[in-house]
Each structure stands twice: as structure tokens, then as C-alpha cells.
Length: 590
View 1 (cartoon, rainbow, N blue to C red):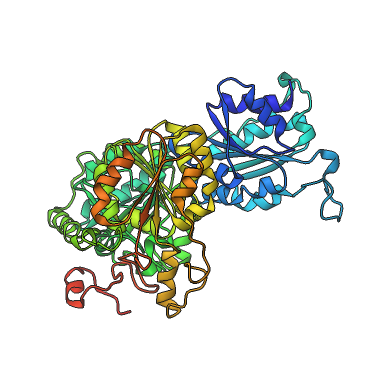
View 2: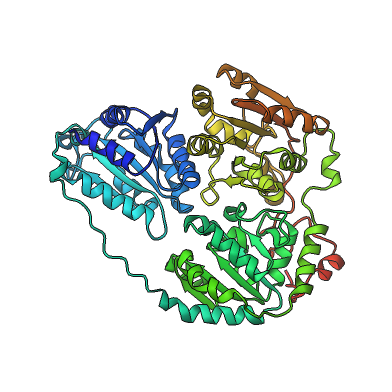
């Protein structure tokens, strides 16, 4: 068979049913092989960046790998932003790029380029993949594919890239004679976890104000149900990172909400007043902790579980003491901890549970003020209304900037709903291609929440959605500019706007007309009075639909931390008397 046939059959054999591709001269053989391989289909996207993002979402929601393919040179380099999303969020994807024929490779020649559209793809991608390799000999293809997939899916997951020369793809091979990859035997002695788990349990037993922090690692490790069992057994209040927001329903008595730089006050008060933090499946990034780690949960003992030893090592270098660092796969940790948690005698935390529940009640993100805004659609009221109307199995993808913050602050999840975004790399334009990947991965309805700025970055994928009649409802939070950057400019540069709205240089197209050009029905919501009925109508559409949501151009995100303050003291600042009543630990003088 041809090498390209082997590649296609190998991917299909992994259980991957869709590969997101853009054709080009150096990848045509592999795409042709995909077209002739049973059990897998190729999805032509309109831009390689979108292909990598769709593959990223596909992997998040389906489990296993997401696959994207592109040609050499610009095709490969266009993948980079989407690959970064997978790398920083620990998502396993397999990226296959075509390369110029072996005889056209520059290799050690000083010339910048020999082959047409030749680019040294491996060196460009090495820092944002777990493994990147050039395959310039057909005999290596099985070994490199097996090795790459093993690396992508073991340990801390992430993307891998295989750059395959054009003549290698079309070479004839004998698959039975190809060498395979044999990974090193995995050694996992769970007995090594007994001591750190004992130390953790002792801290958990005596804590009076404990908080469990849950992150996306619970899903990556495939142990969501075990994680839920743990928190229910403990009965500790739970704060959710953005990546873990769909692990427990917002309505749960245990959930205090999100926390961090742009999160609700309730979660921040709970985390910052805690005397114990149990962090599971999160690397506690600066968006969660604030700019200074020594201000984060400053009077709490800390138990942090992470599969990546480098993440545990960073804390001491950045000023935060971790009392019990546990380097382990979360699934392994829970296998040891869960049996010992059952029946664990803990301190009476009833007063603490009442306090955290009171914060959640007193500091809702959406208030009557938001619901009664009449000059535009208030985004908090939008999220509140959407929370009540979305189906219990809905998948939500959301973009970056103000759109992401409004979603994470005010959307209340429940049932089997899933919520994904490129949380760490966070590029404009992720939500739309992610919605495509989500739809192909699950067959479930998808709500795509994007901004006018984010939509422009990958607006061409409306064509892909229309072509496949995907059940994607695109909500464009249209504030006619880059709202979060405008808010930043008002904070730091006296409101001098440059390249952030129509007067300072941005275009302002008619998104409904653009959607119509792709054959997608579209509508506009202009103020809060239309919200419920209009949302209901859009969500009831059978196929794709675009809804332009008019948001006030000066709409802000609140609460939002000003740089340098601890996360419990977000802006707009609470009256000092009220703020102090909420503090159990000593407030900082900032």
C-alpha cells in the first residue's frame, strides 16, 4: 500500500472518525487516502487555524485524539495558534503536515529555502508540542505514528506533530515489514502515594474552613465520577476553575462558584478565607491566583495534586508554600484517597458551609439592574436567560475577552452540559471552529458564544457549518469593538482608544447579512425586552442559526481585579465596611 493509506488506516484504527483538513499540494495523497478509508471522514475547513481548533474541541468532547492535516509551508504555519490551544490546555491532538519531497529539503544548506513552500515546521512547533518529527523515510512511518500517539495520550496530554515528506506519502510500502514503537514499561506503584495521602488526610481532618478546587485535570484523567464522589464524601465547599466549571452543577450546595481575577465574589471570598486548599486537576495559574502567589489563600495549608512535576516546582520559586505537593495522575491519587475518605472524621464545618452559601446568595453576578437595562442587551442578563433556556445536554463553546468573562461569570451549568474554551492560550476566534469540532464529536446541539471581534478571526467557518448543516447556534455578543481592551485602556491609559472600536479604526460589518450569504438564518436582539422570546426562537431552530446580540459599546466586565490587589478585593471595590465584614483572615494593605 501507499504510505498515505497506512496513515489513514492507522488513524481510523484509533477510533478517530473525523479529521479536519485543508488540502494542498503536499498533503493531497493523505487526504485522498482518508477519502478511501472506511470508518473515517475528512472535514474540509476554510482555514488551517480553524482545523487545529476544531480538532482540539473534538478531542476535549469525544475523548482520545483530535486530528488535523495541512500542507507544507503556510498550511503548516497556519496551524500554530490552534496547536498552542491544545498545548497549554493539555489536549491530545495529532497534527499531520505535508512537507516538500525529500530531494527538495534544505537540510544543512545555508539557503533559506530549496523546495517551493518549504518551511522547517518541526523547529517552529517544537516548543508547543510534546513531540514533533520530520518523516523523510517511509520505513519510519509506523514507528513515528505509534510513538507520537503514545506521547500525546500519556502523562500530561498534549499535541504532537508529524511532518511527512510528499514523496514519502506516495511511496509504496509493505506494512508487515515496518518497525513499530514499543514504549517503556509503565511502572505505577500506588503504595508511593500512601504517605502523602496520609499527610493530606490529616490536614483535611482538622480543617475548619476547607475548600476543594477542581480543574480540568479531572476530565483529562478520565475520573470525573470519582472526583464527584470524593467531594460529596468530604462535603467541603468547592471552587471551580474555568476548565472545571462543568464538573459539578452550579446549583449544587457544595459549589461556591468560580474564583480568580475575573470571577464571582463568592468564590474569591471562600478561597481567600480558607484554612485549607485541596487543589485537584489544576495548575493554579495566575488568572486564578492573581499576580502575586504569596497573596493567594495566604493563611491556608495547601495540598496540590499535579501530574506535571514542573508545575509543582514553580510554586516555591514564585513565593507560595505547598504543604503537601503530590506528583501523581489524579486517577491514581483518587484510587488511594477515596477508600480512606469514607468515614473520615472531620471538624464541624457547618458554620463555614453556611458562610460560603451566604456569599453565593448575597453576591450573584446577574442582578435586577442587569435584567432591566433597556438601551441594549446586558450580557449578564443574556447569560442568566440562556442558563434557563439551554437544553440539559447542550454543549457551549465560548470565545475570549469580554465574551469569555461574561460566560464564565454568569452562565449557570447543570445536567450534562459541557463548557469549553481555549482557556489558557485564549485566542480570539476559537469558539466558532470549536463549535464545529464539538458538533462532529458528539452530534449534540452546540451553543457558540463569540464576540464581534472573535467572530471576525474565523468567520469563514460559517461556510463549514452551513455545508454540513451543523446544529450550531452562534450568538455574537456585539459591542462593536474590543470591550475588554477598552476597559483596560480606561484603567491604564486614560481611555485613549486605538484600534479597539469603529472610531479608532475597526470595521463594523452586518453579521446577519454575512450569515445570510452562507445560507444561515440570522436575527438580531436589540434590548432586554426581546431576550427571552428571541433566545427561545433561536434555540428551537433545527439547523444552524446566527443571532446578533446588541451589547452596549461601553459595557464592562465586573467584578474584575485591578493588577496588584488580592483576588478577594475586585473592582468595583466594595465599601470598606462591607468588605471587612467578609474577611476572616487579615486583610492586606494594598
